[in-house]
Image 1 (tube, rainbow, N blue to C red):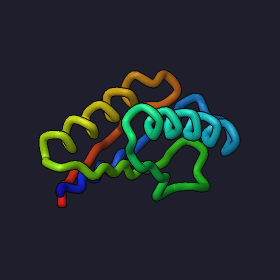
Image 2 (cartoon, one colour; image 1 turned 90 degrees about the horizontal axis):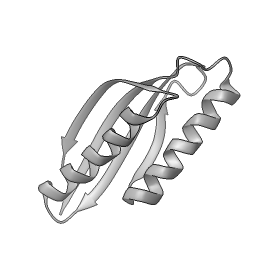
Image 3 (cartoon, one colour; image 1 turned 30 degrees about the horizontal axis):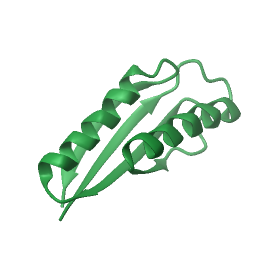
Image 4 (tube, helix red, strand yellow; image 1 turned 180 degrees about the vertical axis):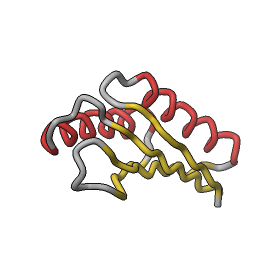
Length: 93
C-alpha cells in the first residue's frame, strides 16, 4: 500500500473576496474528488482572499498508480482558468 500526498500552493488572481475564492475552491475540489477519487482539503491560508494550500491524498496499491492519480489532479488544477498553481511538493509513504 502506498499513500501519495501532494501539497499544492494556489493563487487566485481574480478573487476579490473570500466568497469568490471559496466558490472557486469548492468547484475544483468537488471535481477532483469525483473524477479521481482523492481526498482534498485546504490546509493553509483559509482566511486569505487570493491564496491557499491544498493537500491532495490518494491511497493505491503501488507508487506508479499513486503518482498517476496525483499527476492527473495537478493537470486538472493547472488547466483551471480561475487559479494558478504556484508550487507543488509531493511525497509517498
